[in-house]
Length: 299
Image 1 (cartoon, helix red, strand yellow):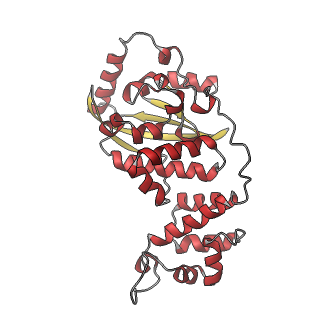
Image 2 (cartoon, one colour; image 1 turned 180 degrees about the horizontal axis):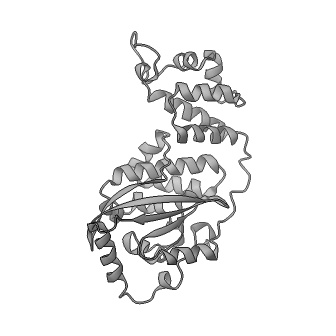
Image 3 (spheres, rainbow, N blue to C red; image 1 turned 45 degrees about the vertical axis):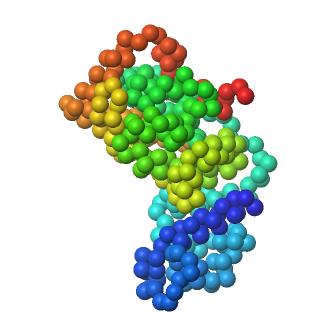
C-alpha cells in the first residue's frame, strides 16, 4: 500500500503544479479552491472518466493500461524523467514491504584502475542513493575527502545538502541541491525497499528545511551531463563540464567525470589544485581509490 500511496501522491503533486492554461484545458472559470488542475480536468485531458482518475490518485486502481498511463502523462505534461518515475512507482505498487533491500554494490578492480588513469581530472563512481563508491585524488581535492568521512556520510547528496562547505563551494548550490533531491526520489522509486535510502531521506528531512520542501513537491530530476560552477577555497573559480555514464552491467552505478575546457582558466585552476595536492602525505585515498560504501560498513 505504501508505494500505491506514493503513486497517487505523485499524480496529485504533478496535477497541482499546472494551471488549466498550462495544460491546454481552457481558460479558468470560477473560483478555484485548490492550486493546479482539478481531477476532472486531468481526466478529460487524458480521455478517462473522472471516477477512474480519482481511483488512480487514491491508489484504488493500480493496474491501468500503458495507453492510459501515457495519456495521463501527457495530460500532466510529464517529462521523460517524471514519466519513468511514475512507471517505477506503479511497478513497485505491489512490492513486498518486507522484501530485502537491494544487495550491496561492489567496485570492479578495472573501474578503480580507470579512476586512477583519469587522474588529471576529478572522477567519482556513484552508486545507489549517490553513495560514493570510489573516486580519485582530484575528486577528493575538489570536493571533500570522502574516505576520511564516517561510512554513513560517504554520500554525495548528503554532503551536498548538509555540509556548509558544499554550500560555499557550488555557486549554483540551490539548483544542484534540488536536482540531487530529485535524483534521490528517482532512486527511491526504483528501490522502495532500500532501508539505507529511507534512512538517508529521513536524515535529510530532519536536518534541512529546503530538502523537506523539495521532497514534498515530489519533483524528480535526472541530468547526465551539464556544467557546474564552483568557488574553491584554494584555487578560486572554476567552470567544469560533467558527464555521467551509467555502467552497462549495473545501471545503478554511474561514472561521473568533471573536466575543463583546454587552455581555460578553469583548466589552469585544476592543474594548480592537482599540483598543490601532490605534496600531501600518502593517505588512504592515495593507497586505494575505493571508498567503502555506507551499506557495507559495520554498524
